[in-house]
Length: 171
Image 1 (cartoon, rainbow, N blue to C red):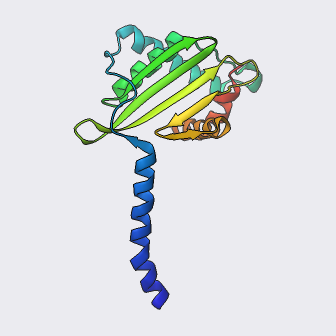
Image 2 (cartoon, rainbow, N blue to C red; image 1 turned 90 degrees about the vertical axis):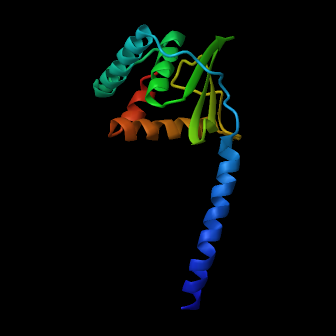
Image 3 (cartoon, helix red, strand yellow; image 1 turned 30 degrees about the vertical axis):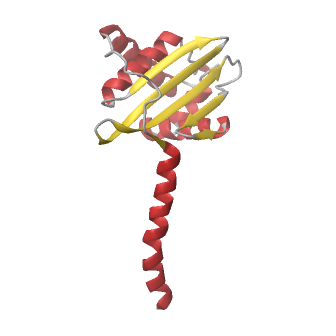
C-alpha cells in the first residue's frame, strides 16, 4: 500500500521533469523561418494536384508506384500547409544537388511563440527516399529514424500502409 502512495507522489514530479526536458529540447523562442507571404492561387492548385498524385500513388499497383517532385511543387505544398496551420512558415532551397526544407510552427501559448523548428536536407537519390539530415528543435534525428517517423505519420493521416507505399514510390 505504501508503494502506491509513493507512486502517486513521485509520478507527477517525474512527468513534470520529462515535460520540461522535452520542452527545452524541442521548443525555441524564435522561428527558424522568417515571415512568408500567403500562398497564391497557383500554389494552392499545385499543392492540391500533388496531394491527389500522392493519394493515387498509394492506390496504384506496387509496380506502378512512382512519384517525382520538383522544388516548386514542394514549395507549393509548404505554402498550402501554412494555410492549414495558422502562423506556420516554410521555406525550400535547392543547391548543389541537395534540397533544404525548413519550417517553423508556433504553439501560440504566448502571442506567437514558442516555436517548433524543423529542418531537413534531402540529397539527390536514385534508390528510394534518403535524407542527409533532419533536425527538430535542438534534436538531430538519424535519417533512418526520421524516414520511419514520416512513414508512420503519413499512414496515420491517409490510413493503412500509405506511408510505406508512398515512400517506396520515390525512385
